[in-house]
Structures are given as structure tokens and as C-alpha cells.
Length: 381
Image (tube, rainbow, N blue to C red):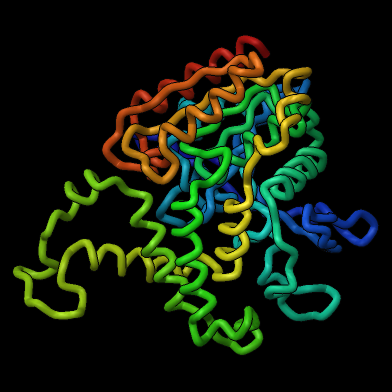
């Protein structure tokens, strides 16, 4: 990591690294019973690991995130997806913490996923890739820690699907974590959430270019289906207030012309989001990662809290009042379970008009809460 200053904020350049964490001698057996003989993981690190390796923080990303959470890639004009939160002097302060962010298993940004080459066939896995669960993501995170020589993480931090990973990790392997930050997440999806994801997957799988998941071999891509899936999902990421403030019933051009094309500004926005998504995400990864979220139900096991009760983790759970995708009700359910087990738990609902996307934005009380929680974690360290 290098830094440059232009009489203003620090601009720091980072590189994405790749490590092979599982191979024939030590394959990954997934929760569904599938076996992956090669698993490569893309990751980035920010800050410096101290001598006793006690200052490491793991960042878990959401459905369509990647390892590039902060800083700039050489020649790139846009920073990482959580750059407003991670960096020198920021709430996850890289002058203090050694931060690791990775692309999760099943992804499409450097980590092995369903579009990767199956070493047994020399062709992309397609739908032969095993179904995944959140616990499989955590298994790979833990192996990356082993690769980096980190046995205990000072904290794991994640929003949305990232928060689900942090929750699963804290409950299943509490010895790994001292603190857990869970933002805009859920312990299990509602029927409505599952329904939204189902529509997106159907759009992809019913695209004529899907070819039963073998579209890479055909040199095609189900772009129409994937863009519709993204448009559908994006509707759920913003609140009604955010849509009203940004677009209202505004025409895309000077006035409404009454046609079946893109006539309203909000239609143009969704069209843009869908098309932009095609350049950075893979349809198969969308299927696999969204399905893993559907099956997540971390408190279904009556003994789910047994391990963490014996080896407590400090929890910070946060929600946003306008988030209807993973609402405050979802966060409070997590808190009830944690507090019922008498685990040290802090909860805060943050006012924000921006819906689920709020966890990606620079909102002062949100960032201040994470900063204060990690400051206390530093003191306890």
C-alpha cells in the first residue's frame, strides 16, 4: 500500500492479491457435500499487522461486493466500495488496524466460483458448482486468516450479506473473533426477500442465452436476465423517500411522451444500473450467492448460541430506519437472541432516508458509532 498527497486528502494505492487456500492435498468440502479441489481467493490488505498480531480486522462484503473495499487501484479513478469507512483516520482506521478484505467463495472477482474452470473437466463449473451456504464463506475466510498467520481477529465487520457472514462466524467460531459489527443484516430472510431474489434468478435462468448454465462455453451471457435481476434488486435497496427525492415522477426528457420505452427518470436510472452491472458481475455468481442468502437461518439450531456463550464476542448491531429490505425488525431479532444469551450487545438504529444502501454511505452517526465501538475494542485489546 502506498500513499500520495496532493495538498489534500490521502490517496492510497492498493493491489489485489490472490492465494490458493485449498488444493488436492486439502480440498474444501462444502456444507452441501460438494468438494472443491482448488480454491483461489482474491484479497486486499490495508495498514500494518503489529508484532503480536492483535490488530487485525476482517471485512465481509455484501452480495455484489468484492475484495476492493478501500483505496485506489493504480490508474483507477474510483476508490473501493467502503472507502468512506476504511482508511487512515476513518472509523476503521488503518493507522491503527490491519484490515483484510476478500472476495467471497462463489464470487466472480478473483475468487473461485461457478464460472471458474473445473480442474476435472477443463471447462467452467456452471451449475455443477456445489450449492453454498454462509458457513462455506466463513470457512474460506478462516483459511485466509490461517494463510496470513492470524489466529484471532480483533473484529469482523460486514453489512447486508457481509453482516450475515459476521454473525455466522461469531456464533460458530467465537474463538476467532473478539468483536463483531453487523450492519443492515438479518438472521433469516423473510418470504418477501426470498421472493425478490427468486424473481431475479428466474430472469437469469429464463434468458435464452443462459444455456442451462453453460453460457460461457457457448460464448454468450444472459445479459438481459442479469440486468433485470439487478434492476429488481436495486428497487429494494432504496426507500420510497429516496426514490421520491431523487426522481419523483420526473420525465427523462423534458416532458412525458407516453410510450413503452424509458419515459420516466426512474426508469432511466434502473436501466443504467442494470447495464452497468453487466460489466462487473457474473450471472452464475448472482444465482449462487443469492441462493445462499435464502437458506441462511442461523438461529434455527436450538444450540446456535452454545459456543459463543462459552466464549463471548462483543457485538454491535446496527440498522437504518428507512431500510425495508433488512429492516430494524430483523436487527432487533438478532439482538433479542444475543441479549437472551446475555452476550455483550450494543444496538443502534440510525436515521437515514436512503434505505438499505445507507450502509454504504457516509452518515455521521453511523460512522461515529462504529468508530466508538472500535475505539473500545482497541482499549480492550
